[in-house]
Length: 614
Image 1 (cartoon, rainbow, N blue to C red):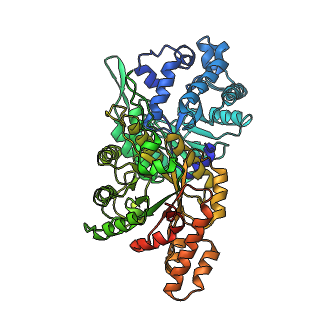
Image 2 (image 1 turned 120 degrees about the vertical axis):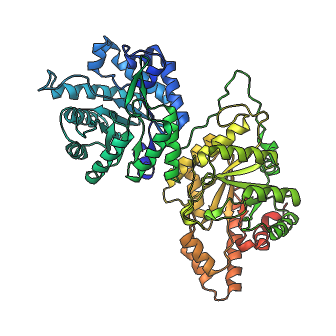
Image 3 (image 1 turned 90 degrees about the vertical axis):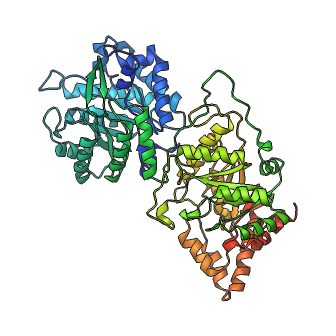
């Protein structure tokens, strides 16, 4: 995974929810030291981490909120301070693996500082330096200071961390509904002092619910140039039948998540009273606000009964395409965009031409560039049933929620679709109807997880579905990404989620593709290179300037621009595409050729070097 600070630059970040109130809900009374549960009840702590990860959290906090020398001493646990902290990190890391970040949680010391108490600031500094050392030694990715009421104590904690570590620090104070700390410091002063500290991210948590927290965020945003984090309580608690009940529902948190993001909040989570259900709703809302979200809902393959899951279908048996790839044959796919109407005459004619030309499969985009077209699933079924050529169905996360995706995929499997390309999808704002809403419950990584679940015989809720699906699962990759490290990281996450093959964006510069592959870990993934025959100078200009993920070198543009007739420009475009095929054949397992404006004969001409061997 990339470092958390780099991840934060490009993404909204979802933290987990409450630890203490959830432990209480699970039957552990408040007279216990909750930090000590790392030692006496590790399975309980690990299960809570697992629940938040399943809900969609990208960062989970260690159960070390009160594991400082002052609080542990009051429980006669000072001798176990190192073990409690290190075990807390170990439990979180075991749950997170490489799919989420682990934050070392540190709360207030629990003692009064001079002049209100007997403890000096130097003692506070030493205590946080001590805990920082344990957490850093155990391998946290960042630190979270939370629920501090004394800004002086917060400043000492930040300085203590910085005396030992350069890892990111999220510093969150807590204020009452009047916007002041327990000691009467108002929010503007708190914000200014946090801005001037060495904290990476500043913000607020606890005490109040979403509505007051939103008001506070607006004030902080006026002052702060640092990223802002918030973790509100689930509203005001009510004491009912001997238990504290928090009243804010997960749905309410979903609404306010969108509002927080609109106000510029970058890091979000939940505090007292929040549960995995709250975090799940926040994850969905966050995904709707950030279309290219880098977190994915972690849909792991975990059976819910002791009965063994059915054996997944082997790769070579999933489809004709997978069988050819596993046998070592180079394959040819040709892209066919669904029509904007119900008339499929031309697609059927084109599909027959491609079948007769020995093309292995037709690649069907799903509403490319957010256009309003016939659904790719309907198109794929029609082509397979009426022409008898296999398809590769693009499936995006833009237009359906999680339940709709599962329904579509089960239906696709029943209708004979075997090859899927999991895509996050273009946002509606760039398409035909920019006012349309997007869903983005999950991104491509989460979609691969979902498909992998179905391939193992369980659904999104880990319920049995009977026979396993047999999808051959592919993903897209942009070798020319402006953020190659992030692209490589996402590709690794897609691979870990269950991806089996890659289709690249159109290749016009082979050295840049080779350089990307040298850095990426693509072992055990079949690589299919995208090839696009340019049909004119205007087409080349459009690709270069208006299509995300496409890099057209100047020499390619110049090669086409020197011709003045469309016929000569087309001929040059085909020759360029054929040269790309020749150059990539040595290290790819196939090509996907686009057919601009439905000119399928051009695609066949470009792929002739491979088709002639089929």
